Image (tube, rainbow, N blue to C red):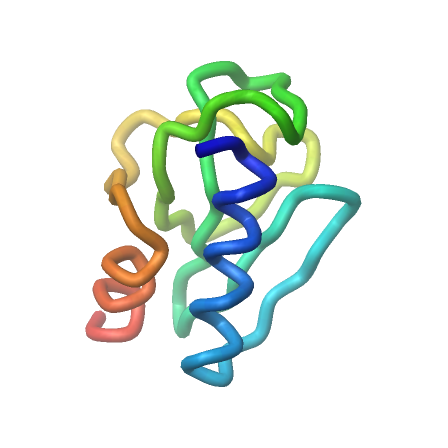
Length: 89
């Protein structure tokens, strides 16, 4: 799955649960309660066609480092599981 496809999956999950999200160029950031859910890649500076590693929960969003893997943040394989944990906390 690419980052762009992961963003589409995240948008679909937000539509189903009636959550808000922001699409900034090709990047998608979902607002799930106290956390943001973002699709991440192996590299910090990636493009929409790079491979996706999964989804992470973050508490603050930095637009300059938006798609790279963050150490210490939980990593999920699906957008559904990431949003489930974000909403349960």
